[in-house]
Image (cartoon, rainbow over all chains, first blue to last red; front, side, top):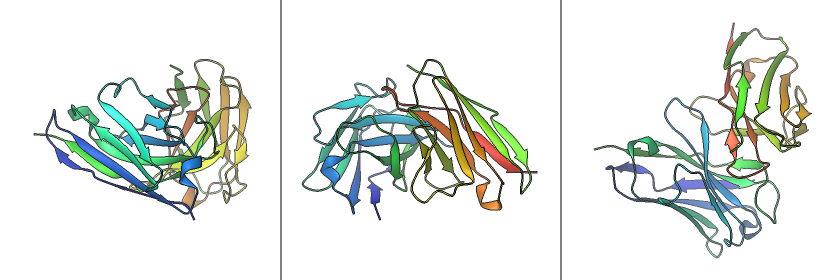
Length: 122
Length: 107
């Protein structure tokens, strides 16, 4: 069974930085594009960023472009999200999520992690 | 960006009812449409992709249809475990976008 385990969430002050990690197992990580999706308290789902299997292509929501950076280390089966210049509106549970189809990015999601909470507050 | 509009935003239904949720895209997305189920405090679960194909292990009481701009998710006979919030999502182009969600509650 595919497993995705996020870590790195916590409380950070506005303007601060945080790096999330997502460790993957039970599938060939390097083949699949990966995503970060977030959910603010009591709100709906918002796609944040995606990265191709090789890491050569990245995509961002306008709300995080220039502040967040997605990356991956295929040797460690780990996905990252570096979050800088954090704002109160970035407060959310952050999920990592796997594309269903390997190869090119931009497919639907088939597996989700359990999420990690990021709280931006002074 | 492609906007996804779900309706209704919430509904009340009884066990055994047939329930239909609609999702409209602001422009044509072919069949690049997925549906997710989320229960309180839990991660979303993938239900349907390509507008009408069930993910592995998803029961056949769930069905999806549509193409272009208009899509539906139908639950044929609502069971207690189906009370949850449902989201549609387009993956035709980046940025990927979700609908606002439909909360299915017990009547």
